[in-house]
Every structure is written in structure tokens, then in C-alpha cells.
Length: 93
Image (cartoon, rainbow, N blue to C red; front, side):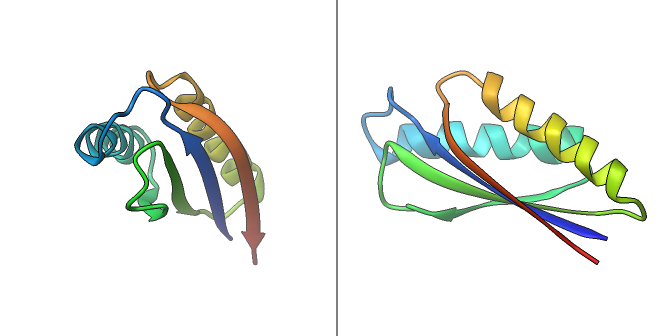
């Protein structure tokens, strides 16, 4: 099983791309270190108050993937300087 999630975020406090990239880099680092996922910024690379993160995970059971991605989303929600706009999750056999 493979799962992918796109998380659209608003970064209201960012005043430039340097601030945005610092927040995004910190968040992606936390996701990679705490969970067995791949993560990257996949959209709005040049807009400094908005981003979309793409996150993927692989496992034998869908229940494990669902729990893992819910934990990922919770971590993103509580990350400082970030507001969650939209989440889109897909599962593949």
C-alpha cells in the first residue's frame, strides 16, 4: 500500500522567501525524522505566504498508513507559524 497526502498551508507571518523556506525546511525535517515518510514542497515555491507539502508513505496495511498520516497532519497543524488550509489524502494498492 502507498499513501500520498497534499497539505496546503498558509504562512501568515512570513515577509519574504527566506522566512518561508526556514519554516518549510524545519517542518519537513521534523516530518522526516519522526515518521517514515518522504516529504517535499510541491507548489507555490515562489509565493512567500503559501505552500503545499507533498508527503508519501509505504506500508503493508492501510490501517497503519491511516494512523501514520493522521499523526503527520496533527504535527503539521501544531507547527508554529503554519495554518492548515486543505488536506487531500489518497491511498493506492
